[in-house]
Image (cartoon, rainbow, N blue to C red; front, side):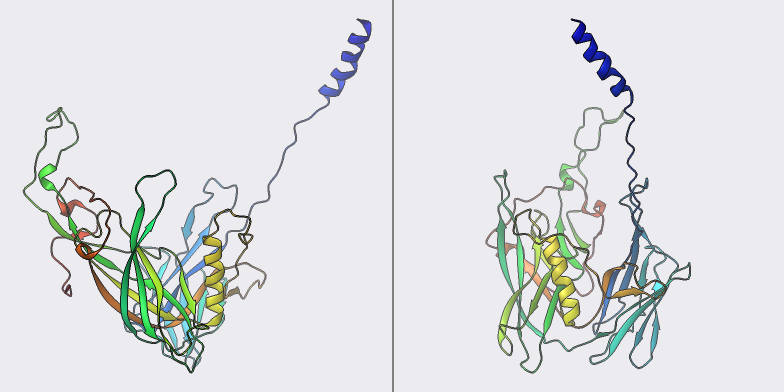
Length: 354
């Protein structure tokens, strides 16, 4: 018994000497991010400037617009074009509407922040791009683990003649889209209130059909180089529009942009694509900090994210008739006046011509 108490006397002083260990994590940098491009297509073209907050801040993870900057595009002949910041969407800067890049010219993006720091891109040369002859459509189904119903959507396949006299690097994007929006105002039921505690339906007289405009952005990064089809007619997957049970009830319209980009821009986007598509497999590439073509003139060691692209552009407008698709998602019922849906309007666009 005496030996037992002796052990306790030896342990207690040791326990009393343990102090809590405080770990201080060094805050990360607020990295400037540049997102945007110019092309030979019609303007205006946009450049978006943002900055993420420092690690450990109460605003950690918040993307903040970089406002009141001076943003210009300069070509290799010395011509300067000033961009104007959007008064509503801060941090987004637009070229004049009549501005378009020219094939054969090189362009540099230059930025001066309100604190005087100056950033510039490396020159980007604009190459010509072939015309999109046709856009083929293919319904794609995507199995979802644990779900009975598959996801699905329409894959866009760009068909074009690749020129044999140059090495081409392609990048595809979808632009603003519009579709026929159908709703059920006859099923409208307001939220419970003192005047309607039982949630009785209150059908509306109007309206069933509207036209909704949206910007989906890139649902994936679509790139290709012409190593295996140089000088040939080819068809390449160039976009994907997911079926959400609303978009393809009737007619959907979008514009596909085919961009001819520099080899350096292609390598940057290919690395971004690899990082975005990481699935958790042992064969995935390790996460990497991908450097773009933007540098700080005040501190060349500063990391600037993003890439300024100057590209040749060809675009093609397409209409997708939902009734001709061989598979569609179940229709989503919207029990309200279609004009109440954000982004919708009663009249079709003036150039609506399915």
